[in-house]
Image (cartoon, rainbow, N blue to C red; front, top):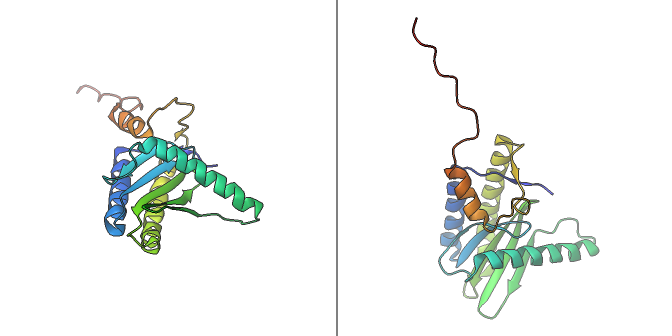
Length: 175
């Protein structure tokens, strides 16, 4: 399984734009970027689950269970899980080995439209995570090891801290 990359402020802003655009285009209630272990990375939308962190954890577990079921059926690549209710639907899409996209929408929104709109968002998220991975491949994040209660706050806190690189040597005084 791929580790989750360390995100910069620019990465978070880019991901925020992708999620907000998906919510607007698909008329979804909310879109959540979830780390595969269930940590909420980022969310957009105003009418999503009351506890997005808990919902993220449940979504990751449901996806993992369905993925294991598909392996038992010899399905080589499981990409999407849709949970359909009488008032709400949830689509959980595989982004890569480190992330999922969770979209919550009402039954008045056609699931096919939401799924189609989510594809471009999945591609955009995947590309941004790959950029972050290549920027600093040695700096991956394991939220469990970090004892993180909120991945969203973790990245905001990391961005606010000064860089860990040593300061540049001061210029030599004029002779």
